[in-house]
Structures are given as structure tokens and as C-alpha cells.
Length: 282
Image (tube, rainbow, N blue to C red; front, side, top):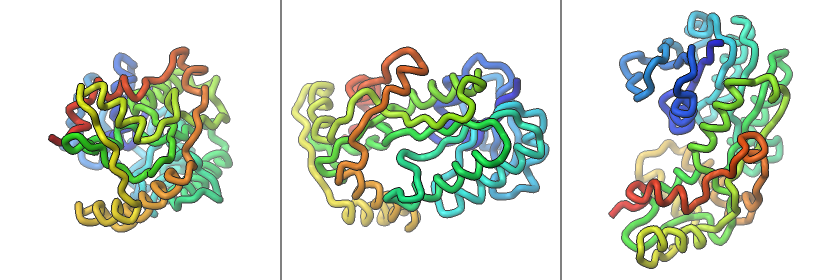
């Protein structure tokens, strides 16, 4: 069974690849083979671009299961559409699609509304499918601790934060044996819904010194992202997410990860211990 991984150089797909270690016939889709430098042995590399449908036929040939992850942006539905069409042409048996938390036609973010369109398109494609909608990534907090302060723009909102490594483990389990997951939409969270104030307290235990939580506004966060060179659309949509989270939109957990994988997801403390150096900038 050949599994094709899209978004192969990104944070989530890299985690999926690591979780698939030891699985035979894994193929990566990359736009530039010279940049396929992932530390993952024994994988095939196929060249293609989800924005260019004419480049996909050979890459999708012989694929049984597709991991479909598109880059965040206004063109994401176009890329997803091209992948689904290429999968249909190639006779792919099952598509596992990475969607977004709370994806819906009335989601509070443009990203969530766009993902809802692509989720519906996949469901209507005639292909077997599974949709995964993960919560706010713990890894989004890398670099957020400066000295003895954690900076964040989600206010007092609580979030069911999830470790990307758990997304990788979940996706790999579905990709290896997709049949039991046919037609299912999974919302993945971590084991607890916590505020960034709670996260700061946990970090204090990890570092052995008190860590304060300093709130910044979503507007300030957007300005910082723009100053750092992020595209305007990404900065604006991230602000939409931060505003929703601050209002409690992400305050819930689901048992889905444990039900499918058979173990609890990693706690924020587990994550912080493993990544203490990447969370703190100095």
C-alpha cells in the first residue's frame, strides 16, 4: 500500500512522517526534490505542486492512501481541489484530509470557512475519506517565552492544546489502516483545556523559576507578525483566531485521540519538558 504525503516539509506532515517510520511504500510530494532533506529514511520522493494540476498525475500514480494537507492561505481550496481531482484520476482509495479546528461555514475565521468548503468537496468526491481537525498546536508557542515571561494573545481563554506529535501519531494510525475511519470527521484536542496563564505556571515548574503570563492584544500580535514579515492574509487570519480563542471558542476537549490510539495525548507539561529550549528565546 503506497501512502502519499503532501505538505511534507511542514510541521504537521513532518510529524506524520516520523510517526510512519518503518512503514513501507511512503512517498513524499515536494515541489523541489533538492529541498527534500527530511531526516526520514526509506521514502520515495515525487515532484509536483498542488497549485499546478498538470504536475500531479505521475506523483499520484499507484497511490492507495493520500495524506492531504494544504498550506494556510486564500488559495488553499484550489490546492485541495487539485489534489482531490488528481486522486480521483489516479484511483486513490482513501484520502485523509487535514482540516482546521471548528471548520464550518459559520466559523469565526476565514481559514475555518475555507476548510469547510474543502471538507464538503472531499465528502462529495466519491472517494473514501477521513477528515482530521486538530486544536491549537502546542508548538505554536515556540519562542513565546522571553526571559521569565510568556507572551500570548489569547487572553484568559482556555484551549484544548494538542502536541503536533500526537497529530502525527493519530494520522499515521489512520493512514496505515484507513477502512475503520471511512466517512469520519475527527476533532482532536489534548487531554486538558488550559489558559496561557496555566501554561505559564507549568513552565515555571519546568524551568524552576516563576514564569509570568503577559497578555498582548490580537491587534498587537498582528502588528508583530507583519513586522516579522508574515503575509498580510496570514497575520489577519491569525488575529481572527486569537480573538476567537480569547472569547472562549477553543475551550473544550474531546476523547477522540484516546479512543482511537488507546493512550492519552501528551500534556502541556510533557510537551514543555521535551521542548523547554525551543519555548524560551533567552
